[in-house]
Length: 596
Figure 1 (tube, one colour):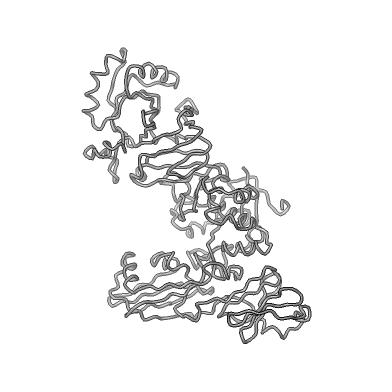
Figure 2 (cartoon, one colour):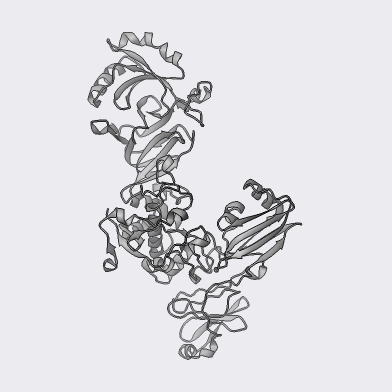
């Protein structure tokens, strides 16, 4: 394989992206994308959002080592390996819309969710850890609740207090024990984090300065295990954020079993590993405000951490490590979906920009997989409610019109006409408003005649048989699936050189044939045509919903761009390599080797 791969010595060059992608990428800022994720580092946001879950409990059998960059000193390490369980607290509770400490809501402090806000500092600041820790040891022998803090320099704090008066009232009691050192009030800092056990505070830091990274082998958070390291930060737009930092390999170990199935052939898993890697490398600045690269959900890619890892998925990641898919040496975003419904689409038919490697492809490999066919019944009142939630107030819904389709058959414009006004949803907004798990793809119709795909897939790639019920009779040459059919809708597959299994009206039977003679007899095939689409929809359709329900008859699951995951599985089952799978779904691409 190596002689097929082009090596590029500059990762930065490989991580350039077409200017047109700035328009295409979903949910990305309009600024030029930055590639924070790399082969050596991917930051995964696990908990984020204003005033999210707190405190955070983390466990590890190996304990933890904390590292960070101290001003004018360099990398500092604090050994917490003796502690298997850490609790990470907010230092003070702040108004979600601002950075003002709330002192009236004492419930958060009383039930132990939040600590502090105010503290007392003993002595001056210290430039070195050794200076601070030696004095801390002295104070810990005579004063309760003293602990080390870093915020530009080393400090020693005492206590966690809800308000200023509570803190100041303790100064007189502490003075006899401080041996001539000063005691001063520490005002609230909305970016401060407290590290503790159930018994005591261990450390505190200002998260606005840099990442304070906790290292271990495997840690547990909320019953899910993750590899490597994590950090917790507090930002104006994300008051308590927990981020898992891993290598790209470790990230993909936790992605593959969630985006594919460990029971699938390894070549399909390898294709998914490349697609997921490309996605992570090119996601851009979507989560820049939160300080990480990707999250754990379908908004990025589903990530289950160490808990979901499997041997075969890890092997697929390892065997594709260091490689990515590129166009003209440039790493590009690779989109994928569950099932194409028999045909993928052009990128401009789903989002906005036309990309040369995301082109509509007849995908008979996906036929017969889950969600090849689906239907859903929607009540007019349900649709009205969804439209109102999306900002459309049409009155009583009367008619739904399919105004335009792509060449693939996917609906490009769906019009809703009510008693007061009308609205048109375009492209991916159709599923966004009506529900992406309800309307599984835009490859749908109101016509029941398009509801069922009659499919037979062969294990032999030369003799695979498949049929779409509304498509024309056809035979596809080369190593694509072949179709044997006559005007009576009889079609079949060769079992061996002497038998063919014939399907007719939903039943099947085996008949004896001379395979060689049969293959040479052109008249057994109906007229051979060029296959362009599996379904022949009307370009426009109208449905009167004024008195009841509407049934959507659809095919496939997902946006239909790039790789169909079930199609990739079928290709791998037929003996295709992951390189062949990627080239089938991503046109004009090539594998390149990345620098570590």
